[in-house]
Image 1 (cartoon, rainbow, N blue to C red):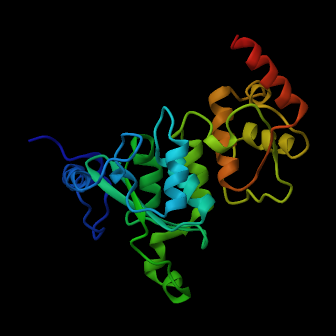
Image 2: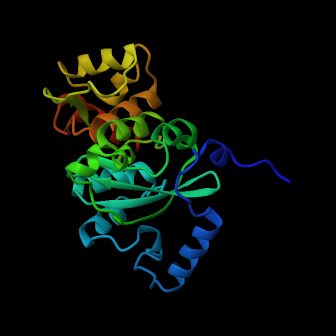
Image 3: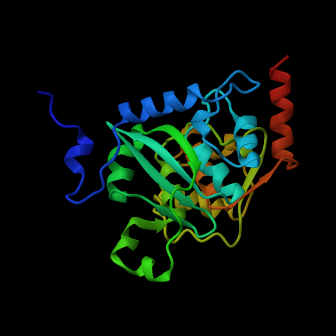
Amino acid sequence: MPPPSRFERTRPIGSPELMRVSEFRRYLSDLASATVASTDGTRTSRLGSLSPSLLADLRRNRGAEGNETLEVLAACVRHGKRVTVHLQCGEFALPLTIFPQEQLLHCPVGLLEFLFVHVDGVELLLVEPALLRPPDEDEASSTSGTLHHPLGPVLWQLAMRGLRTSLLPEIAGPAAYRVTPGLDLTRVSLTNAESAAVYRLRRESATIKAIQDWPGFDRLRAIYLLNALYLQAGLIVSRSHPSAIRDSWFTSLGAR
């Protein structure tokens, strides 16, 4: 008999039963068979019955990586839409519910387990309107409130753990970046190099080409940091900055 999955070993006693991915994929297959193909030839079942504005945003931004977890979460936060994101974690489908307006996230298993055991290998299965409602004050202070967590620090961890290895569509392309003056990062974990980069970006604009050459950085670390700052609503993106225009000019020359 094969050994139990890593997910099963780390699930605490009393945690809710989660659907196995094989069962969830059968559910998605049944859902897809009842879904009319969209005009671009892809089926919409993976994106569920989202609001038209959010669905249009995700379809417009679908690129080489498709609609992966971080891109979907960024769009939901940007639109302020409550959603449930179903992720493959080992053998199980894990539902994360996002409440952007309340800045909360609901996770039915231990959040630290999700972030530090499973997050590197998650795969987006389905995103749909939230299946839960946000907690009221009494619920937030009760034991059930332990399933709800501040959204900002979780988004930071997801971005910095490398779920996405390219810039989010809204901040990609020739641009210079700067950190907003009032951004509060006291609840997130920063390395010395990241702290120094944030300090520098509070005082000057820089392109990704410049950031990747800073101490402790390469291009991938620069991508992680910029995505994380964007998800904290803490990034100013300038397309008209001289550095951005210069990068755009050199890029256009290289394409010839």
